[in-house]
Image (tube, rainbow, N blue to C red; front, side, top):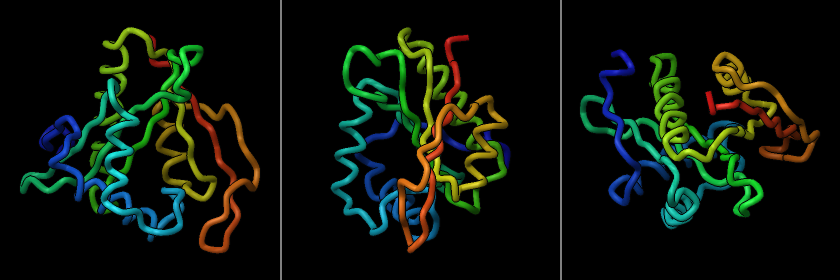
Length: 169
């Protein structure tokens, strides 16, 4: 199924359980999500709060199942950094490689441009997440910083790799 044949819609209250279930999948099975323990469904309230005024999107397959989500949020919630946003994006593994991630990025970047203030999107990626690092590089992100050995999950140390993309063009 092509990325355009999926349904993309604004993330809202109806997506609470599906989004947290996806997030918890990555917490339990990868180094992509930083927490070590599953988060409660109330974490979704924090997601909604963080993204207020910023684009947040879920993607659904033909059956209506939420298979991924992505959002922008302030990099830092002070006016000095209002031109920068941080991205979060998770797609269930069985749905990767179908163009969904690229479509979500395009939609977020277009929404960011329409906001008229966001010039830079930042991604915080675990050094243990080779798939995400490759995905971001292929889509024009470049490494702009690395915090060495600052994370530890499942008994393994990892770096946090900061990646950056100018979206003002």
